[in-house]
Image (cartoon, rainbow, N blue to C red; front, side, top):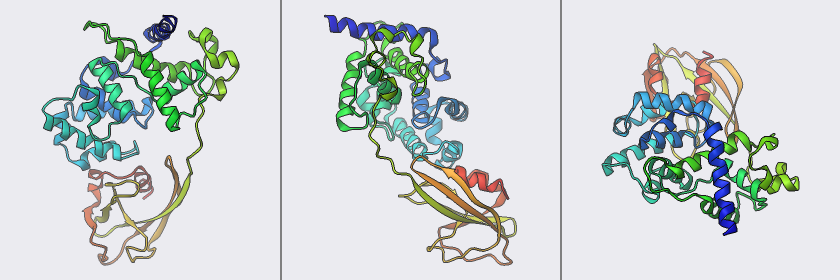
Length: 341
């Protein structure tokens, strides 16, 4: 009974805090599962501040899942430009067509998880926020709050840690009230995520004014800065790219990037490599332009080539009017390079 009281107290404290300090976000003003799903996909690898504008643009251009499903992949990729992790955009578009084929938005954790690009966290968030299901979310913010409050030293990116934190998070989930006037499960999940983003932050957490300070094990033991623990596995790679922008009678050549590499499905100018058989040509416009991705650092040289005859290119390159390049989804790095012309 004592343990049950502690669990209820933890959730109750977070819900009280959330009522006063929770973030006011546009997708929290609706119960539309499409709008909530869209926000969760955008925020998978994106900060709220940046994702907000993209969510609004998507909702304005495609206000329903049917509208999004009817769009072309190029249109979706173009609207996504600048957010990175473009597989999210392709999965979003594919999943929209899955939903339309189902003729309803899936409303259980298991059904939602069947959507392309949706894992445990995203499915739990949608199921709880949109449909009031008692499915606990576990993201970076939740890991941090739980690790510190309960003093858990198990690495959060280990198999053991993922199981331990997932089970703990689910055990802390308050039970649904059974009434329709308040979605306690969705509110709790949003509360613990906001608590980690605003109160129990990675650096300089607000421990002095924390409503959980009396029960926080990390604060008691002086280990706030040490938790959570994460195993170091990430290796940063570097890569150098050389692009040639061909300008011939108002047209330029681009090709779509293939599978198994960065920017799958996006378009780019002539890339100089062993496959094209074309060496560096034209005038150097920019050199060693740096662009940072999560797992690698890119640098790029950018040339402008204005040949007297249309050059022969590999079959996967197409010629388009220069003014039409905005109609194609291109990586953020290419967008930066094009501004230097």
